[in-house]
Length: 170
Image (cartoon, rainbow, N blue to C red):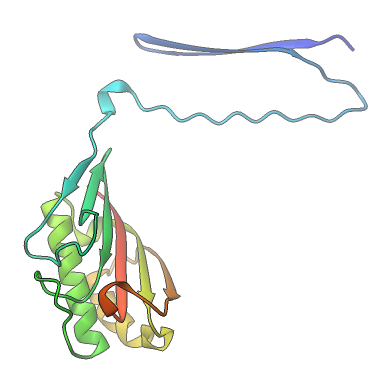
């Protein structure tokens, strides 16, 4: 069988993208598959990466920012149950969950977002047995039920017993 040449052309207003794949040979005894995935962001939608800081939430305890705004999304760094001076609060899992959610809320609001725009939450525990008590409080802050993962981690930052990070729409 003769070689096959295929052209892929996509035209976008004021821009043109052309890809050329030459001599893609197909034979009856050879099965081949070509998969091309593209991701395009128009220049007008490109936005800068912008750090976010809220004085109402726990201050970063390392070389990172509380959150980053990028292309309509907010990526929240791990929030622990600590005050704005990075001092861990004492109390029950419920009280610690309230503090983590309040910290997350403050940073998201500073970024022009909110808890109800969360699309993915990850929660880390020293002990997964704490999840049930955490869930009771968590459900009040996230009634829209964003996607969530939870895992047990024996060592969390600053000796915290739990930590939460969030990805949200801006």
